[in-house]
Length: 220
Ligand code: FNR
Image (cartoon, rainbow, N blue to C red; front, side):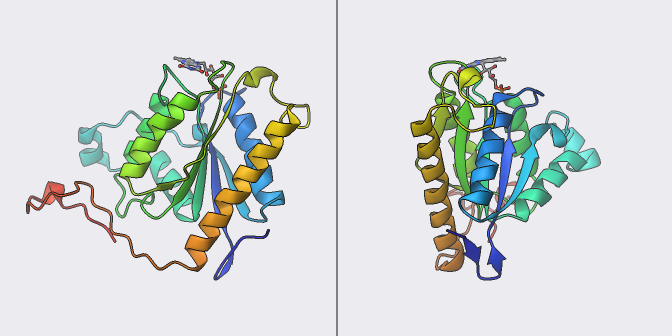
């Protein structure tokens, strides 16, 4: 299946969301990027979170200096895509702080780029839970920002022994399942991108009707 938009192939940002050089999630992101390109025929922008350096979010820093260049770069890369795949570690049964910090900074760009994106969430961990609880936490800020997060997710348990030397999954059944997940996800993205009939409006504060400027962050 070669997924296309009205103007060409779909473009997908695949983000490995660990800063670690030998990250298992970077390995999983590499595999997903290959599946997106080779099996689904979409264009891939393969990124690693450590390409986007940024301080911890601080409203005073934002007021004084604006959104940092690393967050602006991530925002630009995301804006050029129809879909996002995040491969994220699980820290203490939740998402890593560095990833939440990046989402918080990027959400300060106007218009924020998450609101019209589809996302697929995957994780890898040496543990038996595979990082799946972290993905449930990651859904919350993404869905708040208007991202349509795909219902199915993929979590690779015992990931330290989960890859072949070629970067495939060692368990052929799991490899097949991941490939099918990526293809199904991109079919939905293609359908929504090519045959879009919904106009979505994103409200930072749903149900809030006050006129205070701080609450007026509705965006088309
Ligand atoms: C972890 N790790 C971890 N793993 C897991 O499955 N559930 C968890 O709750 C946690 N918690 C946790 C907290 C902290 C602070 C660290 C540093 C690690 C282990 C983690 O999944 C493992 O280090 C992965 O290899 C991290 O992902 P990358 O960097 O390999 O992509």
